[in-house]
Image (cartoon, rainbow, N blue to C red):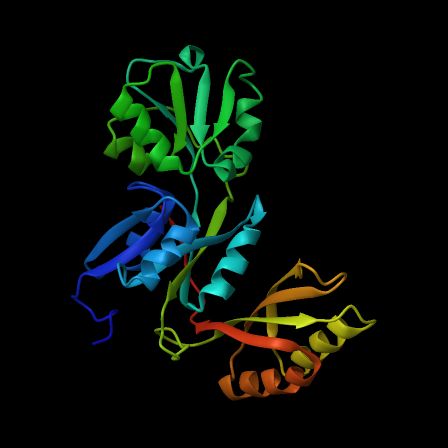
Length: 287
């Protein structure tokens, strides 16, 4: 039976704890299906839980509109063999939370995931007395404050996390730019079936190119000829191979047949061409 069957409780592996933005994105993407959240400390742990069949699908942040791409996650995804079956764009609202009865002036430290800290640097520029400390997750930071009753310590977290751990929001919407979106990928062991659910109009592929004049330009020209709309190109150096790069490309299309033809057309000019997933373009939502 397909693990995405309606009315079946779906086990979803996330990075972070309950109340994390991964948790929120999972609940919004699978809003019409009963789910069980499986927390993991790291993205590597997330994929390990999928391989061990401890979860049916995983959800993984891949880029943020302010902080950019999460580069290690491209490599983790490719090496895992898992496929992308969907995506969702979550508007991120960051909040400064702490134990009830405190003010911002009472705080000496604030913990959160490095991405959340990066996205709220402007706010904390007004509070030089606060030391910002990296942690593995926004929600786990909030949970630790609640469980250990840490006074003088705050966290950057979601409103959902604040409610879940009975913390008070000292400042709401502290992100530097209100158009702050994170793109999350839904990944799954598809057993060779790379197509996601719904209408297929987007694909993620990866390939390698030697450092040759016009190599990438040739690929882009071919994809343009086949009316592929490239929405993202991410390059990463190949370890141990000087000046050679691996590329990750997202493309949208209206004609699936032309899309397949475009891949065959670029194949002779690439090595290690891999389809990471075919799926429906994700919607933008507010958590």
